[in-house]
Length: 257
Length: 280
Image (cartoon, rainbow over all chains, first blue to last red; front, top):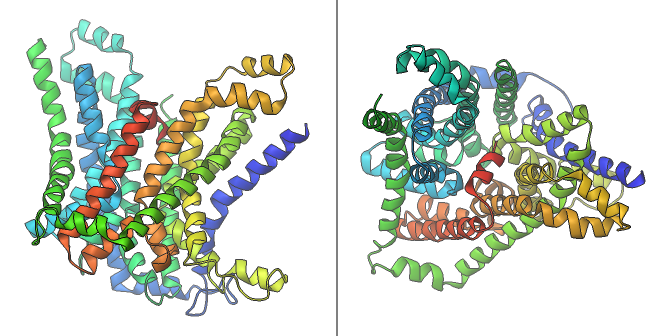
């Protein structure tokens, strides 16, 4: 059918539009010159060397990884517990709590950034990793709660009753029945939390300081000045991490079927 | 475990997350609200300044129009894509889904930066345009409304596709076949059967896209610059350049109110749960 062909052709174009432009940053990172030209006239690893040998760029990468790891830890623990707590709550409590945890998702990032920046200034936390971790955890929490919640919804309660009926204490039931069954949700939530933190730009711009700065913040600052291909290297590092996370998520949440 | 133990257990489980949500979300926002009334010239001075000035009015209008246009364009592209997804074979559906979901993993900064590289004066698009003779000199594709629209549609498209797909997938294909079997043209079937049944998905997609578009900061800031000011960029300017906290807070409250208004109006048509499940 002609219209079916046309539709599929359109979809192919849209799919290409979604994915291909993002890849533009990759060849840019291999430019030999000190300006970006796509595609590069001469290819070189020069700016990759510049990125990984520059202590300030390395520090931003390390800070990003550190903050993301801590965020994931706190978000997974608090979020998983919260999802379990929500499952035990009545319908009104459930609605209220869902609203509270989904709040950051519908609030514009710039508003959150300004609000947190103001509080950070008042508490002397501007430019600290603490502020970044708190902010990122707040942003990552909804993803963990949601992911674990969906896993919990799919949990057959009779399994829990059966375990209890066989004499297992509630902690034992949690450890041996609930946890393994919600593991995909927890792991999925963990991966989302990590990427949310690593990718985060707006709140981090305001909360960062001269010594505590994440990779996206450094890239943001550089883009607004005269930038060299080293910025494209930083962006490619972020791209590689994001794609790795997407792959890891696919792998890790497929296992338990 | 008795009922009281159960309840206490639930409270203990919820405590850490609620603490984070209260301290890092509710309290800062409440403080911001208070700050908006703290201008030296009077409690409502910041709002008066914001809502009375013509320049700011134009920024509000620009923000609103951009969000609206982006939403409409995204929906127009997303609907056929979502529809095609329901009809593709499993392998192709997987491929297209991957293309839709993959960008969501990548930072908005990286996605926007890639458009900067593509749209700049000496970028590959302009070099192609000049070399092929489509235009005598490079087109101004960056730092204007066009660039902002392209960038924002690109970033928001996945958010438009997913809810529409979720709604379309629930429609019984037998209904469409019945419509065509009764002699309706493709357009009529679309208009009178498919579209009404998919309305909740379209409404969710429109709401989410518009909401995100209203609050966008990175994309308009990098792709539009000074020639396409949005409310979020204004707020940034108030804080970073002018250190005018009451004004920044007031502008934030205005933006937040607009976002809440969208959520409330849309909430009458769709459930929060639907938005939540449509979100990756």
